[in-house]
Length: 220
Image (cartoon, rainbow, N blue to C red; front, side, top):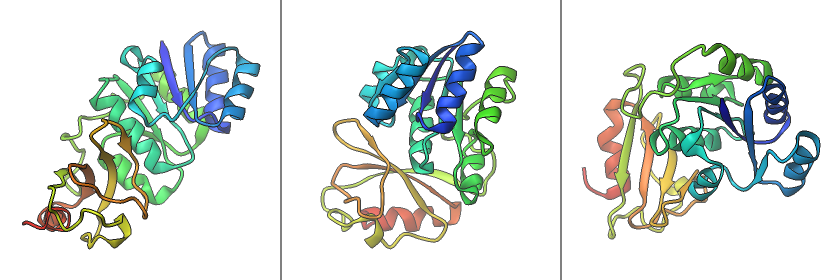
């Protein structure tokens, strides 16, 4: 199998080492140059330097032909972004997303990700044993507790120019991803500025969808 691992830290590197030993073709996407060099020095030329959440880096890694994508950075929001784009843009059959903060487990499970908390061994086992069917499509959530909403920001929306922390978002709502005109997904942080024409992907509960839309567009 061809396996792309996004995140070359201890977990990703350990998984790559084991999977290469098993005979799989592996690419590790790592944004830190020193870490990427160290991985290549140990495992051969398997590391690609770049931000694994960016579409052009995913293309360079060959995500269009990957059998498995593993998102195992140290940031849950980055893992969510990688997992979503791997499934929705590249139709990867199996996507595994690492959870660093157990409080985020419910969101990952609701979205239908194959997820792991227990690092290297669990990632390798998930790949080798095919323990589940991979990511569900964005619209096929495993429960009705949460829904995924996509909102395009109008030119004159009151949210334009505001940071994420300044938005009056409804309860139990997380902005998971922002896609801009350059087609590059961004995992928003508290200081991320909302821009006109942004496509915002958010996780919320059904009863808060209208409130979310109003907070972002100014219309209900």
